[in-house]
Amino acid sequence: MVFAKARPAGPSNAERIRSVVAAAGSLSLTTNDNTYDLFAMHSMDRSGRLLLHAPAESPLAVEAVCAPHGVLVALLEFTDIAPTAVRDRVRARATLAGRLTPSETRTAAGVLVLRLDAVRASIQRHGPVEHVGPDDLRRAEPDVLASAEAAMLHHLDDDDRYVVAQLARLADPLLLRGAVRVVPFALDRHGLTLRYEYSSGHADHRISFPAPVREAAEVGRQVEVLLGRVRARTRRRGADRP
Image (spheres, rainbow, N blue to C red):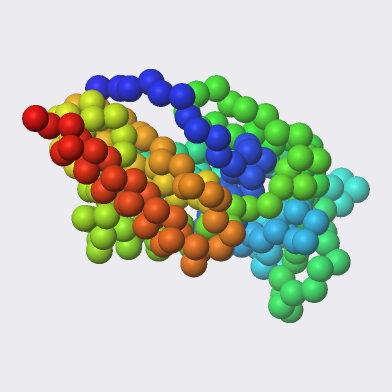
C-alpha cells in the first residue's frame, strides 16, 4: 500500500547532506586504487570541509602521502539509516566527491588529517539523485537535531507510544486504516515523520512543527502543541455527532 502525498517544506538538500555526514558513524571511501570502510574517522571543520583522521601508518594515510602532487581523488559515500526498527531502514544516501590533501589541523600524534575539497555532492532520498553545489554545501549547517535525533526517536518509540499513537491521528484517516503499527521514522527541526506499516507495504507521513525548533529542548513544547491539535480535532468530531 503506497500513498503519494506532497511533502511539506523541510531542510534543503545541502542541509540534509550535512546532517547525514554529522550523524554518520561510518563511511565508504573509494580512490582510484582502493576502497576503505572507515568507522568514527571523520569530522567537519568550521568552514564546512570534511576531515578524515587516519592513523599515520594506515593504508589510507600511506596512499594519500604517496599520491601524485599530494592529492588523492576520492569518492565518499554515507548511508542514513533510520534509528528505529522499521522495514526499508535506509532513508538517504549522500555522496561527496573531491580531492583529499593533508591538512595542517592539529590532532593526536600518529594521526594524519586529510581535508576533502569537494567538487560534487549529491543525495538520494525518495527518487532520483539530487545534486548540490560545493559552495551551497559549505554554507549549509547540519540540522540542530542531527546528533540528538536517534536518541529522541528511540525515546518516542520505547517510552512514548501513547504520544506516537495520538500524533498518528493528525494524518489522513486512510493512513490509519489497516495499519499494523506506527513508528517514529525521522526527526528534524521542521517536524516529525511517522511510518505507517501495513501487512504489505508502508507509508510515511510528515507532521510539521508549528515553528522550527532552535534546539532539542524545544521539541517537547512543539509536540505538546500538536497534541493539543489532536484533542481539539477529537472534540470537534464529538460535537458533530448527532
